[in-house]
Image (tube, rainbow, N blue to C red; front, side, top):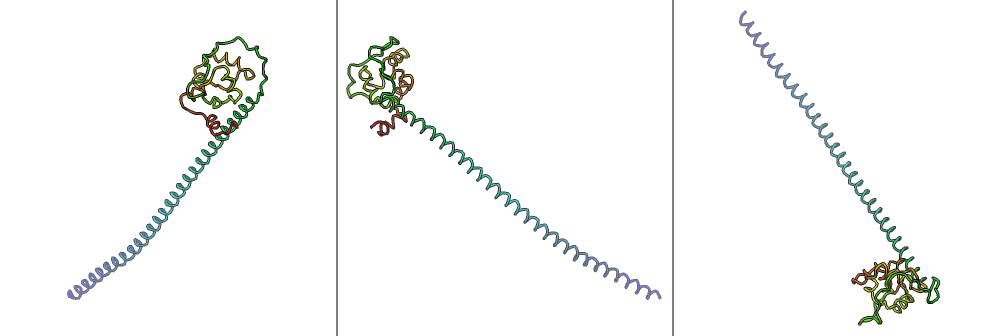
Length: 212
């Protein structure tokens, strides 16, 4: 009898062990599949996240490029506006110079000069090498240049060194063109030209774009 009980107990223990092993095997299979599914889903989500980040980066790059294009367009527009304003100013200056040279201002009778200021130092003739091209000063046309020569002014450095009182004298004694020295700022232009520099108007005169 005890042998039968021992046999039964052994059978039960064996069955329990087999059931436990079977449970472990089934659990391992189930959890393994779940783990594989979870890993695949994680990889998929990671791939989507990477794609979103790449798309966002591409959009940021595009936005930066568009902002750069907009800034460049604004700079070009400002440069074009500035160039147009400068061209308009130069056109006005040329028109005024031509108008002045054709005697647009009334000529005062000889002898009616005003006793103002102090006459600048004058030359009886130009220095060796000939006179400077005074027409490079905006506001001085061929006729005004001849008038300056008649008054003894042949060179840029003469005009560049005029004092306020001397400017007043010349302004008052430019027959038919009174006030042109101050109006067109001859002295400042002459300083640039006397030092070997140039101005936009002087460049036009040198090219023959102002006077024939």
